[in-house]
Length: 326
Ligand code: GDP
Image (cartoon, rainbow, N blue to C red):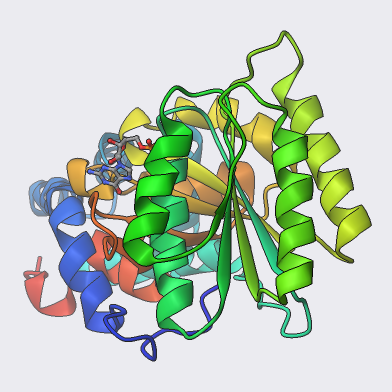
């Protein structure tokens, strides 16, 4: 779901909220990157391979992934070579700019104002946090003053429907549900029909990470996309890929299938609170070429923070004041 209500929804975390909540997860990361880099800079007399190696190591250690770490290190090498002294603040500035460039390559899409209902699918593997994120987004939409309908289309995972029902009850929002094991497309069809009939602004669809039948999940998601498009022009308007930060860069191989086959348009990165490996955001941009739209920082309803790229880059590399001169 594209955030066009930042700062306006009651209780919605603003810019400082992003920092406050994400910092915890990124603190370890940035300390590690800067300390390693700082040590290498102090040891070497000039800008040499040892500094670049330390940088690549620190980035890999922060779960940026070896390919992305390699690409960033190369960019720093190109721009900093020729410098007589390896200067930590200068290296940090170059790195910050390269990170911002990478993030800018997959811009955040705008919410289509004319779409009603605005249909969002949440996709991803079991346990990534789809159901919880569906509820968190529903809470934000409601707080922004929009009418919301939820669809429990994860009919496979035991308890998923009841879990969403509990959230719907707490939020006092309607939910379309069938029994466990039912056809997810049938749930979706009913939800689309209801949303149109009621004039609902936002329809959030929690999808399955696995299916009961041998049927291919990607085929089922493709079918759901066709049904949505047939019932509501342009739907699904967004398909959010929910990724668990704690699974690290290896999880991205599986994630790529959701981009290709399920047409994911953006990422929600969950469980960043339990991970000091915030570098995975960069791997997502480089490997999946998708924008990160939200990060999950806990299990409660308001533990979903709109992703702020420039604040993220600064948090990853430490704030200006936290950088000691080389
Ligand atoms: P699903 O199978 O993809 O629908 O996953 P769930 O929504 O059931 O989430 C799996 C578990 O992760 C649950 O225990 C959630 O409470 C938890 N969870 C989801 N998002 C976050 C998050 O951002 N931080 C933390 N710490 N836990 C989360």
